[in-house]
Image (tube, rainbow, N blue to C red; front, side, top):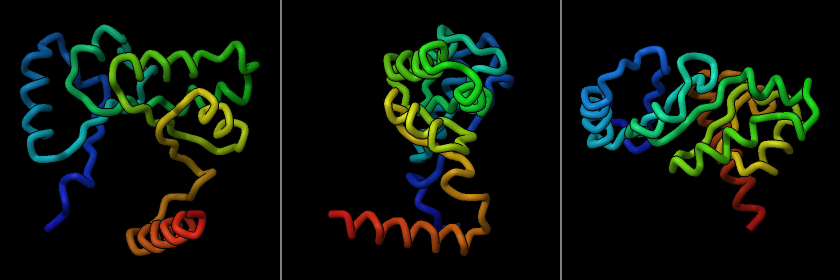
Length: 146
């Protein structure tokens, strides 16, 4: 497909993990040798364990939408989302929050040093051509700010 593999990220869910981390890491390492990054998707809703996450050779920890939704319901000081971000950073992971739909969520995540955010606040799902147009527009807007 002539795609630059450094632009790819494979998202895997926690439910595929077993206790054989050595075997899982061998497969993850082969994927990473190709230049593809690896993310744990839906963190916090399956068999989440920070001890398990520490053992895996992944690049990203993707926080499930459940935690973004809880930001709307809970008082900020009672939310554990910021704690999850902090712990993931201590494990050396880049943090992605999915399901961001409101400015309030975005503000909270920025204040708690979330690395990447995804959701309808930024864009609805797009077909490839429309996504490329949005990226080109975003790139131009960022250059205008410099």
